[in-house]
Figure 1: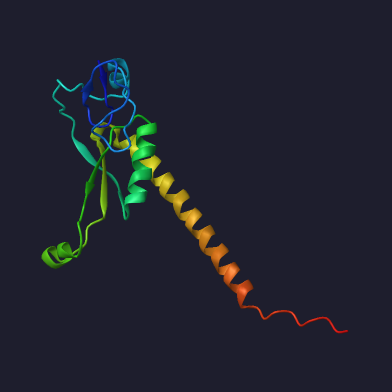
Figure 2: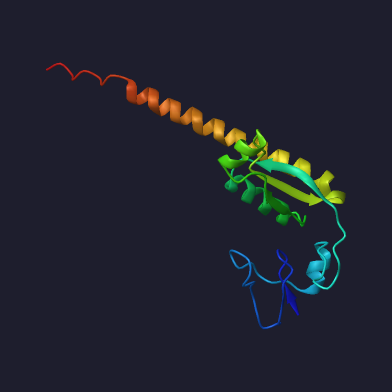
Amino acid sequence: MKYCARCGSEYQDSVQDCADCPGNPLLVSEQEMRARGLPMPHEMDKRIFVRAATAEDPFTAEAFVELLQEANIPVLVRAGRSGVVDKLTTGNLLPWWEILVPEDLAARAVPLLEQERVQELATTDEAVMAAEEEERESEQPPAPPPAP
């Protein structure tokens, strides 16, 4: 049998990718599931998941999930808020997405996510500086035509 490492669905050996998950991830063997520390569908998962990070947008959440999956760290993503109604009903805004990992792997996951966040901020700062430079260049008056 083959399994989806994301949702745990079980498939026949002839099937190559998960029909239940977005992006249709490739299925893996039982040995790969165990190597990644993922429970088999028939086993009860008793792990406790804790918050390793938060993301303010779905793109950052997706990047965090991919990073953790590459490191073979199981991850759950939970929406912390769904819109304006939460601010009206609770009086505060929670982070957009919570990135949850097994408690015993949090010490490994948190530094990876912090490093990714620092790189993301550096990239954003570089983009801002480039945009500001481009704006300054466009604001300069055109050079006068050469004298005949």
